[in-house]
Length: 272
Image (cartoon, rainbow, N blue to C red):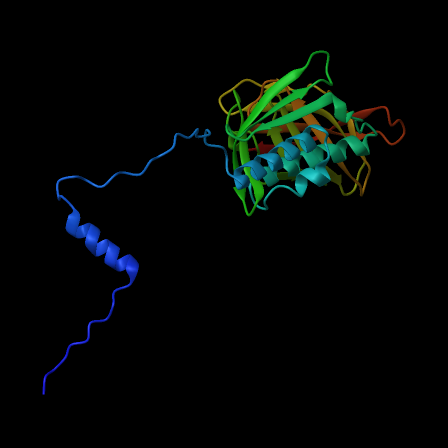
């Protein structure tokens, strides 16, 4: 019996490919793709980077408007940014206790972010002439601000206190609450004072940086503390850095004439 081999018909497309392959000369390369000309845009910041800088601009605006509730909600806990806001809140509390809380017109402050450069430019028009600063080198932690620097200024880490300090004598106690050297290079120190058994008055404050000259308090405060009471006080020193000793001169108030006092003791705080 003869055997037959059944040939299955090739699909038309496959047959054409076989035929074309057989006709190829072998020396002619296949035609390359016809690539059109295109215009390529410059690289732009990612959406997340832009969102971060929008956050940075909103934070800087809140700082200059002294909206510390807003600013505090935008910084990460246990960071240099949180330490900065803590000091500013203490300053605001001193102002409030002394009835000197400032009123700021939002139109006096502009804060604009440059997402590509990762900077925020600020113009503050509250003074006699506009003040301009550039905040840069923003770092974020869990989508909140951790730190930054200001162009032309020392690093923020070198301008904020880092260590607790207290002193007590003759029933009077002083605690360092916070300290910050601002962009003007002036040092602002917040101190909590308490007196357990006499009415007292701060009659002098002097700050001596390590290896430097003594600075007298520019505010010339006369701070009274009632027996059993406490106060929150601000001291300011021109062109003074973090890292030195704050000496407070304490008098006892004359009970028969509260405008008079006599020397009682001195208290020393390390500002570092």
